[in-house]
Amino acid sequence: MMGSRSATHDKALEWAKGTHGKGSVGTFADTARFGELLFNCVSGVASLEALKAAGEANLGSKVLVDISNPLDFSKGMPPTLTVTNTDSLGEQIQRAFPTLRVVKALNTVNAGLMVEPVAVANGAHDLFMCGNDPDAKKKVLELLNSFGWKTVHDLGDITNARATEGLLPLWVRLFGAFQSPQFNFRVVR
Ligand SMILES: NC(=O)c1ccc[n+]([C@@H]2O[C@H](COP(=O)([O-])OP(=O)(O)OC[C@H]3O[C@@H](n4cnc5c(N)ncnc54)[C@H](OP(=O)(O)O)[C@@H]3O)[C@@H](O)[C@H]2O)c1
Image (cartoon, protein in one colour):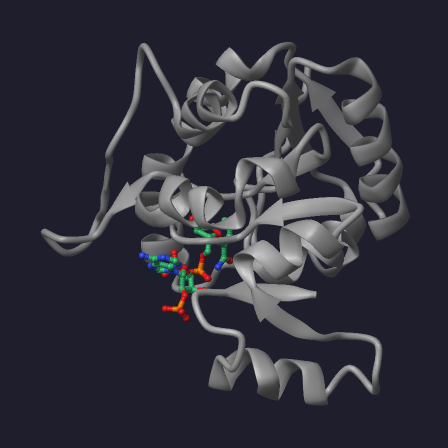
């Protein structure tokens, strides 16, 4: 289920139509109630507001994969980070919803690559993950592996979102240089 501010969001309905009955749309609250595993795919500056609309009771102790980035485009390109260095959006979400099991992942790659890593360098590139709950990270890792991710670096607790969100200023500049989002980072040692 894809949630938005309206249960009849045009683009969401269009998406659902293409899923041959597998996908549905609803409000943020409907979606949080429905989901077994939740994804925050809302604009970074609106993420806390959207999760508040989803409702603390509906979020409960579910696993939330937070793919958002705290990017401020108000002054044009390149965007700046709205939170950085000593805090992160991942931590802000975890603090606002203490029982929710937030796992920061996938925010460092383009949407297409998230679910098809093999599309670049035959999948030989890396992903980062962090969060406070080991079981939640295990579940997310299984899902990432099913998408084809082979190397996922678990950086530790959610404070490490400072580092993965902090990659975005570099990511957007590489995007500008390559004129394509089809690239990723690989750690060699
Ligand atoms: N696109 C990518 O390849 C990519 C890759 C990595 C991470 N991310 C992260 O994923 C998130 C979504 O990215 P995006 O590319 O789809 O574009 P975006 O412009 O960052 O986000 C657009 C989405 O946020 C929603 N939104 C905006 N303001 C809102 C508000 N006040 N309340 C509730 N919802 C609001 C929009 O809903 P409406 O349609 O209703 O306006 C739309 O669904 C971002 O945090 C981004 O950093 C994206």
